[in-house]
Length: 280
Ligand SMILES: Nc1ncnc2c1ncn2[C@@H]1O[C@H](COP(=O)(O)OP(=O)(O)OP(=O)(O)O)[C@@H](O)[C@H]1O
Picture 1 (cartoon, rainbow, N blue to C red):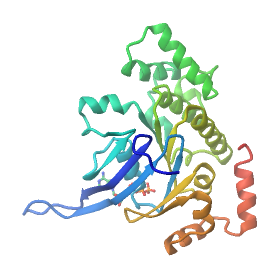
Picture 2: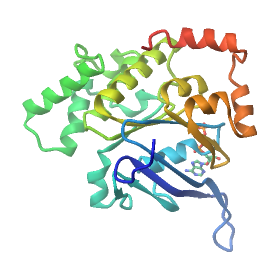
Picture 3: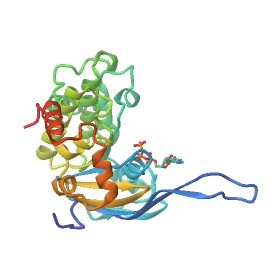
């Protein structure tokens, strides 16, 4: 796909530094968690981000989601540059980018039904009559397969159901981009496949862009159109998913791919078939 600045996300030279220590003389050294990353992400496209622990994947995701302002560089979102975090303009943009994390239990309110939480997400951003908000929340819950479970509390749902509820809460705002940071990593393999399947369906139905961050290369391979490999804060290699997995350009990518648990082609095929039996 060719980059088109008005459609999708364009990240330019993103840098994020964190202090690694302070001295009595003032600022300590700065550590570059993300070090000059640029890419584009089209509408309806999935870009997978892989890399070993500490390579900067989550930091990159937080900057793309607008949760953290970059030290330098910028993100253009459907033609508009992100405002500094906290600005009024940013609050309007904020609903168009949502993030889904690894542990759904940590991001829901245990005292509220999931229907109420989806409705609340909506009414925080829009002034709506109660009946209309209820209707849209219910519609969204039905879309993620929880149409009959809206009156349950989070502890009455399984991990996979709770992740569906969190996805519903994110998507009820009609975002253009969903940043998934290890969104299926804590789930059982069969439940992972169901959630991946759901994300694929929603992506195509809603023309969502996905930035899909995961250490699980098999999952990334299945969900992504393109994949980027992070190493020490840099995007070492980025390209079409199939090409990257079958003919990686960089030695580091080859080593990373070799670390997939079942690493003979037959074992990998069997593992993929088992894991993704539910995929179309
Ligand atoms: N808020 C922070 N303050 C200081 N250092 C941080 C902060 N967030 C991340 N880091 C550091 O930045 C580096 C990149 O972290 P990040 O979480 O982005 O990596 P990751 O690739 O997502 O790793 P993992 O797969 O383990 O989640 C790490 O060395 C981490 O310790």
